Image 1 (cartoon, rainbow, N blue to C red):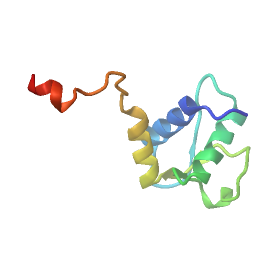
Image 2 (image 1 turned 180 degrees about the horizontal axis):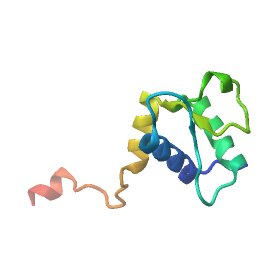
Image 3 (image 1 turned 30 degrees about the horizontal axis):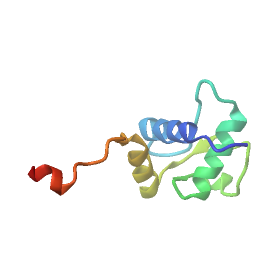
Image 4 (image 1 turned 45 degrees about the vertical axis):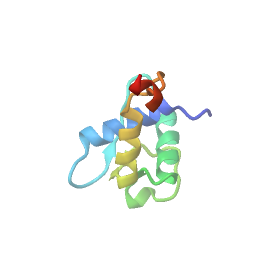
Length: 97
């Protein structure tokens, strides 16, 4: 399966928005199969961007439950949400002209 950055961003955003104080969160996203979601949750968990409940500690490609985002997960989501400028910044020389 190909890694889908948009799906990863959607999962992280879903968790950030719907995170509860306790227990797992069942990630449900329109337009993606349960397997696609579970696969990308496993990738995000391996990368330490989110935590899964202890009963799903081992990589389980049927798991769609998430405990929370990690510090790295919040930072990664912020990076994904930062617009990319395709225009190079002005050089110091140009500013002085």
